[in-house]
Image (cartoon, rainbow, N blue to C red; front, side, top):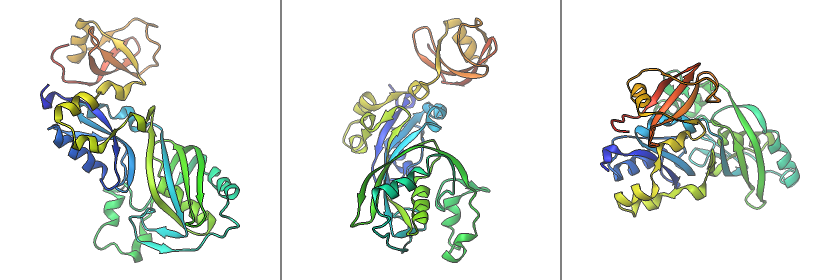
Length: 314
């Protein structure tokens, strides 16, 4: 298989110290891919699951972009950070007294985050305000601590399913939590808000994404494996098929004639009630020989193309 014909994705266990983009760039260059994308940005000091999409598989990123996620995080009390993690300017706030640093009290505070909540994203984050991402605004050379508060960061509605308090370190005044949440949740914001509620400040010391949709760390590939493996072995061992990104969609197998129609932009008639799909619902499309050709949309009795692979032979 030529590098330009590659189409698939890697589920990478990103290490601490690399940005998400740098991780994707190194893997893409290693296998000589034309382009890549990644789903769910992880900050450089965070680790864990990071999907890296290769070439035309980037067309199907939507399949995991809104997926639920789980994280394991260490929250440091007593200090605050301009970035809500260890990368920012850190200042001492207040020690948390033994009266409050106990399992029952801290766990009670954590449970108040469960449900649909509004949170203020970190000042250094990828959300857009106007034409710029927030981290770009904050890294402007004229941005100083004095006007740090002048940027109005709009709150964001997110969903928290569960939070487990796994460990308390009384000496270091830190806790370890596991959190299950919806897409777009900022764990750094939870650390900051929890510290504010306890009156002592708080920021993320370590962060690891441990699940994404139905995928877990055991399904991932350690980044070092890409450095120590040949191109051919990387593709053979670790490249996942593109249709795995959309496995939550209903699969539909098409005849060769209907494949040609879809690939040429024509509508295809489908039998009523044959597919239990709602109007305008997305579906996975396959040829007669089970080759994935892309995504279609059911519109009443018609099937129309949505996002297709540039397939010549099927």
